[in-house]
Length: 112
Image (cartoon, rainbow, N blue to C red; front, top):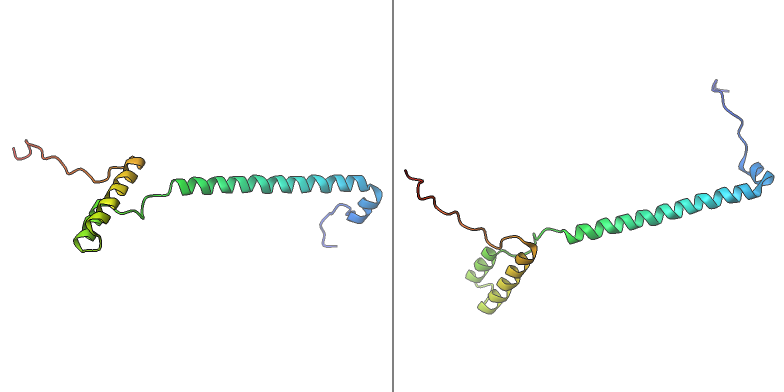
């Protein structure tokens, strides 16, 4: 031996021969634990995916500045610009973000 004290090892077949009900009971419990773990893990992963998809940033939408530039370059006509502008304003209104940043208001006492 390698010097390590080891307990007696009982082959699985001997356990099955001596008490097959205990082996089946253990196998059934382990199978149920595996199935429950798999189902719970799947539910958790799907919930996380759904939450991430819902909270995706609005990176792929146009800003009003983008739309104005596209209209100036001739990529959009007036009707397309108006439709996209309304859609953009509606999307920002639904998200709670301002569509266009407000310009800073000048301070009347700044030059004093």
